[in-house]
Image 1 (cartoon, each protein chain N blue to C red):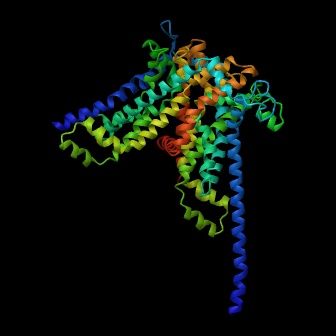
Image 2: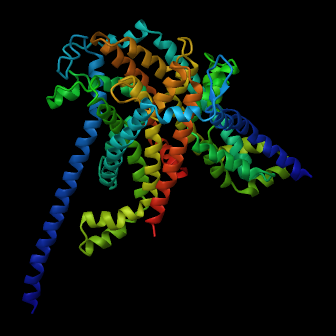
Image 3: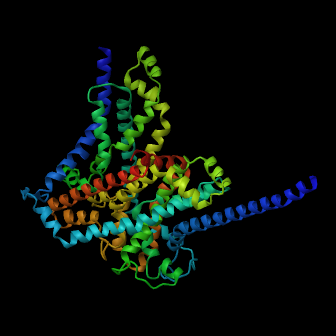
Length: 281
Length: 293
């Protein structure tokens, strides 16, 4: 009897969190699918349109461009960021004097906010800013369609490398030092050891990194808003949803984009996990 | 025989020294590369700081070092925009969201770890499943809901929807799971209520993950831009990211650059200082988010 009463108390402890989830996560998730079937804005009642929103989007050049921009951003920012992070983590993964301090230099951008960083990078990327001055270039980084997307990606690399360094470093803790020592005694070079010892052993971490890179990439918003406001090929999916819903007041259509983004992210995540699991054996 | 052994040993010792020296050179080279790369990363902060104290005419001159140091530039954001208001809003929202998360996640974590009621595992699974739902997917209906609740342009709208986190519940459940049941049972025999047990036995044992969670939530909230942009568009409720982005949009000429740099530096200072003070907790938090995905 006392046990049943106690367990009821236990359930009550979970209720605040569960109520918040139900109202602010589960309900909107169901509702976004529902809304995607309506022509809807906040002020007037919605009109059921079936799959019309999806049909429209499939033929909408701006929607295609947004997906292209997101995919470009994920690839151009996160592939270099992850590779660079792996290199830096491998380098930092030894007990050297002062390595704690060097870590700080790479980690610091992770502890800053995207908007503040983007404000700073606007100046770095200014035609007379640090990047052009240092490299002796005269590129209009943020106001030409050829370079704006690269400029946003470069900003993201600087901001995100440290995040992945932290995760790789945690993964490298699981690689026993003795394995490396034994392999070098057998004459295995650094590259061989990386290929046959380190990489296989950190594969689970690499899987997590791959999944997080794609998700973080698709969530990007602030950098594009502050750096270019979505011009010059940088209107990523997230910004497209925002503008469709709030500048054009087409919430049904924006919901359809969100549903498609969710489906895509879920598929990519599953595919990535499967790839990493299969090669495990 | 002995002579031979000795002469044979000498070159091998020399070879050993040579490999040792080579290894040392290699270590030094790697070290140098890492430091150089790190300084390159940090140079962006230095550049922002130096630009913040330059005069508008000096800021695009191409010189790194300011001609004159205008430290008073740090007053400009406060004079030219309601920057103090944005700052205060960010602190209020950040602290409230953090406290709310620590409370709801600890309570739910305790519930999922130490009680046995019907549906518990299903509920926990649903909580974990919400990890798959990023804000980006649901913010349109979420905004509609908050609009219907009348919470647009209010602190409620900024705080309550962010009041709990699946990651936090997972973390607290794992941590509280490790608290021995015998301790809780002993307290129950002594007649302590469940809330009392949570407060005086469980919480003291999981303070470290609670701190990591608090730091993580606060930092994430400090960075939060999209949601506050939707629900708090008026100056009275704008948080720093929203305010900063609005200031940037109004300050496109070069004369506003030092102001914007000063504002950006002031905006990233709190989380940067927290990070420097609590590096280990910070790294722990980032690693934990990776562990659960």
